[in-house]
Length: 112
Image (cartoon, rainbow, N blue to C red; front, top):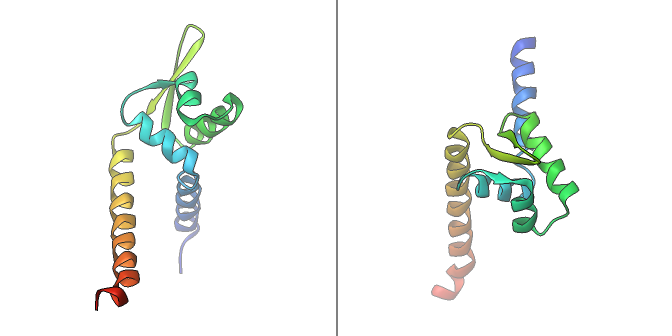
């Protein structure tokens, strides 16, 4: 049986994983792996209203995935830890393998 502490840890993990469950947030993370970006930069890249981009950044910031730095009237965002890129890379490899396997299964009848 899990302890209360272990259950709380899994709850915190699930809450953190939710931050990665939105395609726009994944695009933000992918862009930030290239270097810091301002909110305006991300608005242009995502072609999304500033309010929506700010909301996504808020989710990522609350979960410790991005850091914010104010410079004058601009706020610049960066990834808080290089391990975030590694985690995303692992998931991308898993998904790519699943896609490849699925593609082979779909193509299989035609290859015989």
